[in-house]
Image (cartoon, rainbow, N blue to C red):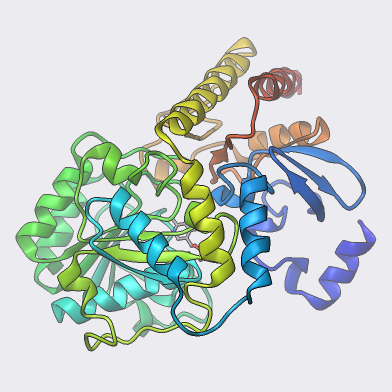
Length: 424
Ligand SMILES: *Cc1c(COP(=O)(O)O)cnc(C)c1O
């Protein structure tokens, strides 16, 4: 165990400031990052890793992209926070509204959790209804109301998914399996008139990568329209990553509200909730729904976000999709060469990997994936200098800084790893 991890555990619970950073699912101890550049990061012991975590998708250009670093440095020289409006907040809001047709107004916040919390309160305030529906295996941050474990099968009223979350806090949360239209019908029959909002990851990227079945999102929209519930797309991962206008642009959909994070902050703490102007105007100071933040629209974060969006041209998305396709194809071939059954779903620029012979369509099927095999693969990749997420329920993030040669080195290493796994 590294000296730093020992010290970290003495003063930080588990030694990490977010549980996904621990290596609990794959074994071993987390490394400590010293610095990063492009597709690489270096730990405090000098090891060099090709990084497919990329701050869980926040770094779409790669680490320390010169234009982002320069924008942040320039902004910092003028002061790091004022608690008063700035021009860059307007520019970033305009950039989001311009790219995402469903978003007419936007409020900037500091984390995806905060954006989801705001969306839930706003939907409840705007509709006067209490309940929210979410899907099992979708993650919307760690607000109490959405931190709910999934019941399987039919729609169930939520049970708390964490100690410290009271039954009261989740008693208005309805949980339904992803891609399950009949469970959705049952939930809308039972609770439709009380539903303020339906939150969904339009491409689920927190139970591994699970794509929506054809018609699933459209059916959701139809049911929301009929019942008066607001449709909220959680595009914290997919926003500005799978398409210039997010998953909703890719699928041609118009949710009432959307939340963004990760890419939009360019690696700094920034997220956003946006949508229909009439709904957004329910927020204080115009409307009665209170929401606030000392660091909201922070000058460094807005500078980073604007610098990132400026780089995300149509060519950039084509390039990134090409890299993701190369990675996905290479991983499939690597597994096939050793007859290891895997599912390698791809959603344009996002790639997933499940060690299972069966198609993964929801949380229950995701959980049939072989975690021990994933841990073995993770360990061999890490030993070879390739860092993928330390959990079988995450997504692989390529950045614009990843080269074809690096992707090929990754899939060659994966082929060796799969071969070693079947040898046992
Ligand atoms: C990461 C994530 C969140 C939470 O964002 P934080 O900034 O970590 O609070 C919410 N929704 C989705 C889909 C995410 O991937």
